[in-house]
Image (tube, rainbow, N blue to C red; front, side, top):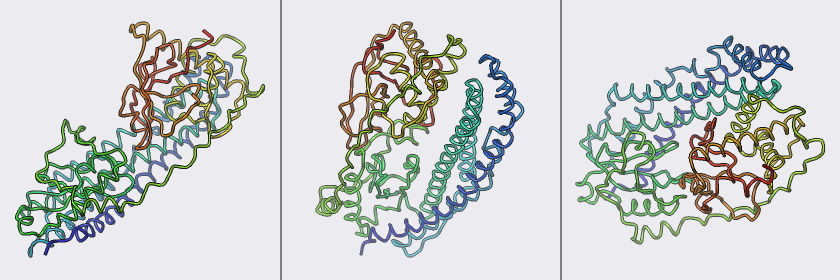
Length: 504
């Protein structure tokens, strides 16, 4: 009598519940320390920032930037929010996850054989997993340390109040906490996989079969490998961030004796392929590419997807609900109060650079944020661009804010066009991923040279727009002077206008 797939799945779910418990404990400790560090930084820097803001009122940008760097020197060490993250929590997580994986693997082998034993992974392997996690969190901490310090410098240089700067600092802390949580989950799966493999090897299991997690997050890499059998060690989990897939034991003699539930895995693979939002992806997974691999491992056995069981599994998938209707926000009204005629004096070059840096940093953090929306209005007014300004909230802008937005738009465009002239570039082939069709064009929109980035934004049901765009329509790009990628990483981004500027 075969070992039913549901029996294996139940044991995997029990293991996953234990991993989730361990992850919650580690996440609470690590993100709690980041939150405490953020509060300590706020307490120390608030008074210094307010004093510096008052002392440098009326000074030029260079003086304000110098004062900001002097301020940061006085809180040196506090801007790294991960400096005091407890390493011991990750050691506990790795040990517990490895034991959970080994225990689950023992239970799985015991379904097929009378005798099964658990085996603990080598201490060196577990230590390496914990060390990698600590290094990743520390590396993110240093990256956000640079962003925190830049918020302080840019804020003081632009004369922004403490409330605005504090909001930026808290956003950085929140991003860092979510990043730490992601590393905790990946570390948990990595350690449990080591426990699995050690126990499989101790029981003479030479192959493992991938069991995909069947939910709305199922990706093309996992769907492509669902149900497939690989030599032990060829698959290293997790395949990517947020991956919750696992493996179960497999032997040829079990299959030849009729002990494996091939029909269940046929249905599992067919359903996985049907549910994957992006279709199956056959290449090396993101984590494999980080390890230097350029192709996916070869399976030794693949379940069929043309059987009755496979077809019935696909038929049982509930239909995807229709997306909600798109309600396009009304075009925002720019009142006389918020319409700017520009600064009362020509801005200095340092002020122009500071404005460009401020608004570009906000744009990559999110196109619906306040300063990003201000940049849209700034491009509209300064460059004479026609188009809609999409926003989900109605912001009120001061005259000074709109003045800086116009300065930023002009500086972005001039620097970008100068760079294109130096490079001899006249046009660029770009892609834009959209989830729903639209007729109206925004004042500025994000495009990319990487079609995979566009596919990610489009989703399974969206469209990819491809166009060769003259460089005169590009406001700024990731190749422009001073560009810095945001929290989403490198997107090969180009910020495009619907037509050439009418105001040169």
